[in-house]
Image (cartoon, rainbow, N blue to C red; front, side):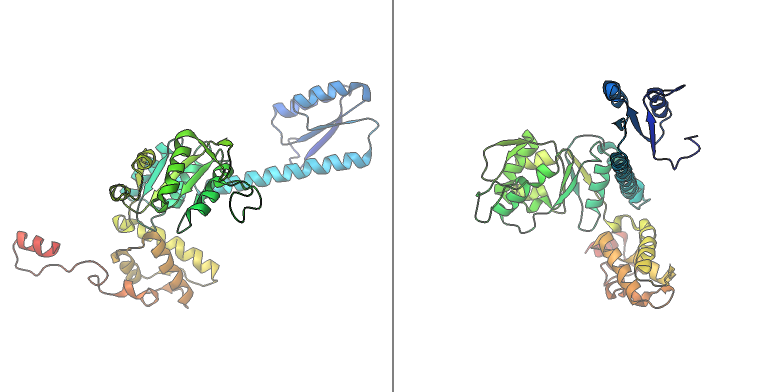
Length: 377
């Protein structure tokens, strides 16, 4: 009956019944893995039996005579807990779908190589360094690695130091105790504590000042730190995923990045290809951007004209996927018809290829050596 009625959420039964008793019913429900909360009713003298039933999977129990108000309250709580579990499960499914590797669009050889590296790295505990130009999707890759690891149900926190002063930066990362500095009116947890069990993504880690790098190195090595102004050692289990569009080795040579921190971060380095290195993926990216922004702006746009697509393929995209997305969004906002045409694209894309960054071909009649020299120059 219960298998035929999946809408049933809660079963209330007596612990002692003729035929099948409450415990046998509970065991059968759990054996069949039915999504059903079970509330057992028992006489006062059999509470010990009800507690034993709780140990094998009962959700709650009541003593007889049953207070109907209390019964209603217990059932309401069970239904609310069920709703919350379903909501969390649904949200996790959406996250899994959004951050699965296949959701990162790309069918080029460069992207297939990236996917292979991500699959190999995700289940490990190793620190990961993502290297690539601005706009190549480093944060999206970091989230996908996190959501395919055993930390997926724990926090993923993004941190970008930017131009943040060192004291405020360290307060954000490590937390502080009350009175540690002017304005510290209460204890505060840092991002490392909030991310315990999960991952922290350091976007543009090359921007972190030297004085903070030493403390970051300690967390990576020892898995422990202290609050700003505190004396207690706090241990955490956090995976570090860092990203940079700078040459960290050059920063090490210049003295603006610690060599020991660089080697700690450089355990597994994953390079992200620039968009110009995977031009065959441009149509694959442009069409979903068109569909998304047309829907958001309630525009009838359905396609990209062949001439416009040719310009998208010819352009060098110094801003990578982010620039492509912005160009498509701009075109959608300005569009009036059903086709995204050349006139809607930014001026930089509509220039001649040599103005957009591709050098002109050398004149005819040159030898191969002269042509190569001219083209390189």
